Length: 137
Image (cartoon, rainbow, N blue to C red; front, top):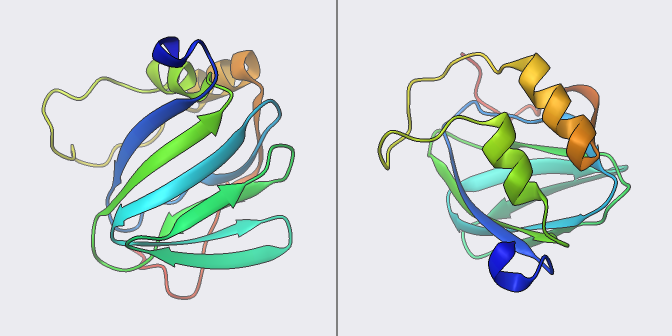
């Protein structure tokens, strides 16, 4: 976001199979995903969608949404938020990667996520999303 004067932010995500976000709302930013590889399935409001390599997904601010990795392949996406701010949320809510590889899965730090969410106006409104095709542990 600092390179765009706060106009937008881009973040590359690598998500392992079985990853899913909680249903949540961005109150101050639109969010989009460009799928670099893999597949994802999601919900935005009352609409369900599926996106594969090369797809672009737009998630307007103020509408509850969430997504899950669809299949057994790692999902790689480019997330774009307008305006910026989500990039700072990720820095505060996450842990820096020690290397460019997926670490072993660990439970999320809910307190840390909620504190960063309150600061950047990202509200959790439901449990992690699940779909029939989402692999389970």
